[in-house]
Every structure is written in C-alpha cells, then in structure tokens.
Length: 203
Image 1 (cartoon, helix red, strand yellow):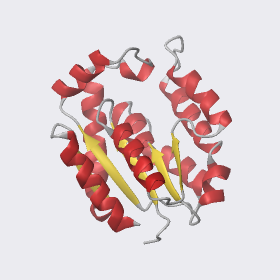
Image 2 (cartoon, one colour):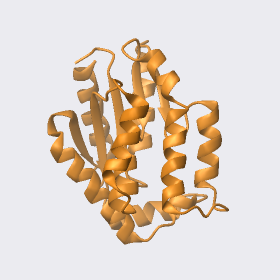
Image 3 (cartoon, one colour):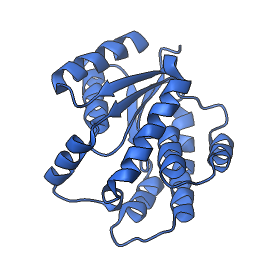
C-alpha cells in the first residue's frame, strides 16, 4: 500500500466517523505528517454549495435528484483529489460506499448506475482503506437528540438507517482486507486507540 494512502471514514448518522477523522487529522498535524481532509458532500467550494442544497431542510428532492446532486458534488472534488493523490495522505469523511449504502441500499436506486457514474468520475483514483463505524439504533436515536440542529438526512425513519448500515456491512464483507469495523457502542477512547493504531500501520 502507498504510504500516502486514501483513507475513508464511513458510517450512518451518529456513528462517530466525523469524530475519528478529526482525531486522526489532529494526530497527523501533531506529527507533522502532510495530509488533506475533506468531507462529502463538500470539500471544494462548489461541492460545499451543493452540500448546503442537499442537506437543507427546505429541500425536497426526489431520490434520483439526490443521487445526481451527490455525484455532482463528487465531480467538483475530482481535481482536488487527483492533485494530491499519492502525494499526500487523503482523509475523506464519506465517499463512494456512502453513495451505494444510502442511495442503493437505503433508497433502492440501481446499483450499476451508481457504479458506472462513479467509475466515470474517479477513473484510477482508488481508496486504500476504510474505517466503517457502526452504531445501535438506540444509541443513534439518543445521539441525534443531542444535536443542536438536524439536517434533512438526519430525519429519515429508523428502517432507512438500518438498511443503510446493513448495506455498509455488506460492502465491508466484500473488501474485508481493506476495511476495519469500529463499534461505536463501545468506549470512545478504546476506539480512538484502535483507529490510531491502524493508521500508524497504514502510513
């Protein structure tokens, strides 16, 4: 594996992925290890504009429009990603597997369509490793209630999130050597150690 890997943090709402990617970024900065950190949707200026549109509680797009907006946001990140590919460690909060988990397993959109557009956009840009954060329904609901504000994707029914998480786990099983599942129902400091320990091995 490249010592400048692309590492993705995946998981449903309140699974801890953003906590861990931010912690890893702080760790890399502390050790003066060159990297970039982006989120999807988001990252580049144009992608951030699309993010606001997708997640706005005032939006009411159908599922196909949502898919196309997510892919458009990714398209706006392609130049940024390719600029740093193999030159810096790239940390991404949600990526291709999120699109598959949410739009295919969650909303039922054709999988081959999603794969085809992603392949067209990304070509030879590959993910080296993924941390998949999982969470129980009870803890997800509890943590959502603690958020000061909820966006549009925080408000789906519990069955939707259950299907999305099952989709993530199914994806992890097909690429088991490139995935590490983090059980966010366990102690946060323990999981922090697991993630940083694996990170050190990856870089």
